[in-house]
Amino acid sequence: MKIEVKNLSKKYHDNFALDNVSFTLDEPKIYGLLGRNGAGKTTFMDILSGQILASKGEILINGKNPFDNQQLTESICLIKEGYNFKKDLKVKNVLKIYSFFYPNWDQELADSLIKEYNLNLNSKIKTLSKGMESALGITVGLASKAPITIFDEPYIGLDAPSRKKFYEMMLEEYQVEKRTIIFSTHLIDEVSLLFEEVLILQEGSLVLQEDSEVLRENTIAVSGKEDKVELFLKGKEVLQKKQFAGTVTAYVYGTKEEAKMHGLNVEGVPIQELMIYLTEGKKGA
Image 1 (cartoon, helix red, strand yellow):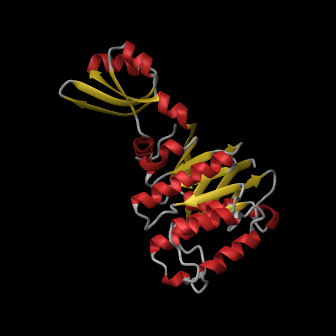
Image 2 (image 1 turned 90 degrees about the horizontal axis):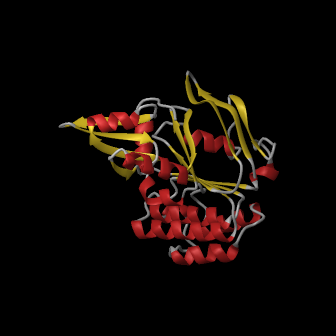
């Protein structure tokens, strides 16, 4: 499903959560939606899932607005970090309700995940630990088989092995049947290798949208003597530069081969580090 974001803004009182954001998601991929707290990620996901209206601009999914459009919302599953389910419902009731709502619901997958995370079908949501409630959210998100599946910090309370299992299951399901998965997380290092495309928001604006492989290949950390580094940096976009005892280290857009030709030491820049540098103040890329 094609997602078009056109001049999207959302204003709360005097503050813009999103400010004139435009981009397109053309095809089923695993997208990493990144940014610091308050960057506008959750607001964007709420508008995309049809839960709130934009102040200006629009989101179109296959040319249609998702707000108050049941045909579209049946194709979108948003799992947030908490408060996804009514507290007085039992686990089995939640699964039943969602199985009616999502046409592509995979009960076999849901049963497998319930067993994997040792969830009691007769437990009420209000009795679940934070980790168990997250496990239920993960189960619903994956089993929905929604063409647009959105995970907003879905793993709160899960330990590292449980999170790893979730990432593995998400990738397995995606490989079997492609869908658009939008994944927002602060644990970027854990999942960055899953991302096929990365979007970074800062203060309500889009500062980067790029293919992950391009980022990994062309965003580099170079270090060496000042004169050599400065020569290499000419005409390039520099993210950050540090100097210590005659040695300069810089994060820059460039190629490893070119940097090595200049006699510089070269390393890749992890996506988490890139996000941090791009969101220190309001920088564009």
